[in-house]
Length: 224
Image (cartoon, rainbow, N blue to C red):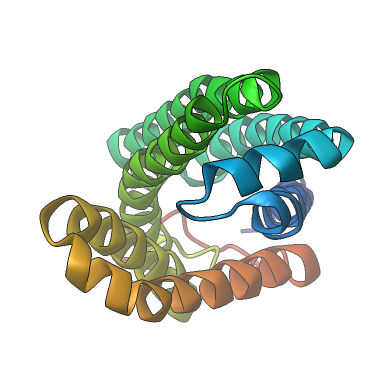
């Protein structure tokens, strides 16, 4: 069977959208929230947001672009992998869309922090803390999507099986971090970096594979 003409470009387009997610997400989290957030210090946080209001608004815009790209990635993965399992591909897509919806609604907390910064430092801190909680809850849906994606990649003849390990690492890491934060917050605070660091590496490697390689030359829809 000859190579499906649109498969490799679609995989590379997925990688490009994934790169947008990574770059926008890192910018918003590390260079915006990381620059202004002051844990437990309402006055300091409010002062930082007032001083860097333009940066905060740029961070919100970056998050919006990230969410749009997330929807694109969810749809493209569904297109690539639905021949393997229609049910699993739909689950992966819907879990990813659920994550996007939660993240979109959660941005209202960041906007509230910007609006309240000059008026109510305590409310500003609460809004930023709620944003952090909402972001973590959204990652539950992303983690579930990653587990479905891992199973699809494992069965697909279009991708090497080792690639399925990457979303598995991400899915387990995000789910473990969120549920530990809910059920054992002291433990989560101690080991969160150990859980999240491998997920970041796995997502970057996955993105680069899709951008550079795209996919293997397909001969079968799914492995036996």
